[in-house]
Image (cartoon, rainbow, N blue to C red):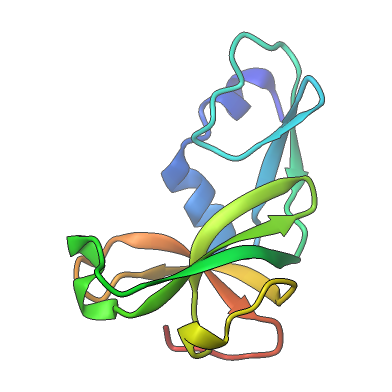
Length: 131
């Protein structure tokens, strides 16, 4: 991927790629970045495939949600490690209280029931979820 093309990659384009099963991260000066993180003036941006699965590192259950997710509460938000990058997303397909660290998850993109806004979601590996 050219440097100019990599710099054009915004969050919506990244969500589109993740939703299509083509998730990626950017390598820049030894760092792993996910849009919209800016790579600064670095000349070396390289697009790398996001690992298919990640591992939950931490989680919290949201009971008093942001207005965009009001109809979705309660839900679990987790930080999951996908190779060299950590993603934050909502865990679906399981009871929010049952989400544990070391749970293996896949990343996808869903829409909030309340607002219709897209967000990163994690699904336990092997589970199928409507949201």
